[in-house]
Length: 328
Image (cartoon, rainbow, N blue to C red; front, side, top):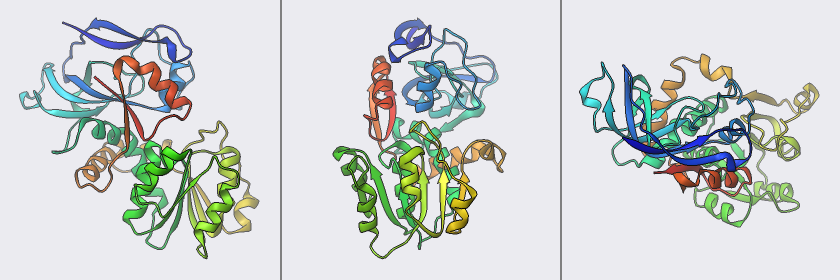
């Protein structure tokens, strides 16, 4: 049986991603094959594609099929796999550059989660990766109803979930988004104040939106100069929760920065996530449960699998809203 997948033979720009006919993978013992309906796309994928190591993930050997997570239907079982898995709607995290951009993908049965009834493939694939990371960030933030929260990149996959989570606990939410389309998308999530960070003087607009409130939490995924400008809005005793630096530079802070206003700064991802009780599997389970209950509903933007290169280009130029997924 043949199938189609995105294949990469060299490192470089998005154009190195090729849509090709390939032999369908065969599951080994303890594995299943999934007829993929949706594949998750990450900014990390673009770094790996370019030949950069992705955090703890080394540069993969070529040729390869990118992709970290998939959702679909189990169509073939490997040896020693319970027959009950056949035909079930599942979602799984495969690991970095592990064959997710494909019409058929192999996963260890131990990595499978059944997709909650009523949830779609795109939403499930968003929550298995981006959702689990969001929950790890929220555990560090420990939001309260009396918090006043600023979310950077609020129209992104994680940002949209953070806005919803903050609203769920009753916090006042200020959201930053780039451009009119993204501003409207975030406003629809229930943010109290939405500011276009591409407009000059955006930080003053945030101050006006806060009124007499004092900012208590800043979720930073941007870093660099914009992140610093947002950090400076925090009130006395506030806390910054860092989980990325899409600007290309991390948020530069000194001990004096924190002492001056009794602030706290925490890196919410990385080794800490792997060491917590239950690890990533627990976060995945809780993320899908939040989806099933309607507590967290991801924004997604879909591209055809054959157009993975276009999806990468759009993601790298910040031309997407929500979590980017490829659909077969």
